[in-house]
Length: 445
Ligand code: PLP
Image (cartoon, rainbow, N blue to C red):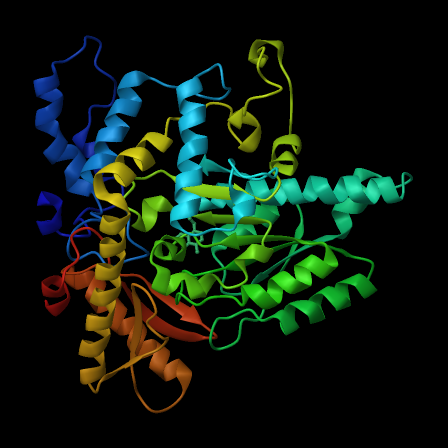
């Protein structure tokens, strides 16, 4: 709560920390009191306070008392649960929590561990890792498929022909995943509304197939970072089913809203996806880091980069989950504790109220903007994001420059912190509501 009253963006210049800290580590240990007394002077001085009431940037960063308690227990218990034996409690809690979450969000049955299929969920650190790991799984699936069709091909022949599709409004992490996996990425036009449609995807796939390319992976976004638009997952999913393409859904921000029945329509067609990801650490009151990923068939994930070492083997490995194979690092934290604590102490009712509050704040702010003739709302306000700009008749360029100027003034003023974006060449300001200390009063100010 106290953080709520702090300035969102600090008054520091790059390099400030070197002047505050000695050039070498202390030889003898110091007391906790000494360290504690430096927290304000050194640490807090340079913090961007994501939970300040004046912070409206990016998307919210979740924080809650149960989430904090779980992180303390996680650190205190010192759990490193890469295999079932490395920590049975960590592995088993995670599978149950991923099922709890999947049911709370009404995700398709194919994603549930306790279901009948090969699907299930895993906690990653971030949405970026989720996209990368699913792309790697899709890559190995396609390589095996193509090599079994033509054994004369090499893995590199196949790799060089693969294509990943996403929209030009998807998050930068999707492009990054393509670079890391060394697969060509095509950013398709999402139009003025920022929505990728099936027709655009189909045209790109047809063109690529004519050129002997292999459509491999589509990353659709539900709740784009720029403007919270939603790709048409139903149209895209139908195409991916026919073309045998892995469809990953990045719902890093908006996925949390699926906990409320009235927002579930944004994910129409989700049953056609191969994998689905959202970040409880954005809006579900679970402290960073916690990114929930579900896959329809976990074998593609767990076999895509499997390496065995004697010291990692154990007697139950044929029948238990070893999450080491579902992620990029080996070692892993007991992140599901945060989900357990939050779900138990806040409950689904409490989480629904939290989401509804954030959406109501956005609607409230939208109504304030609409009353002010100088501004216009740029995209429909569907969840907790309001995109606005100063209007000025004339060319985009001119309009963009006055909005850039406004953004600069807001940053210099320091009373609030927000980040701008562009869609289709139009520059606008984003106000993200819904963080723990956001309120109507803060929006009025
Ligand atoms: N995808 C979307 C839609 C996002 O909004 C974000 C971050 O805001 C990301 C991916 C990246 O998330 P992470 O930092 O967890 O990798």
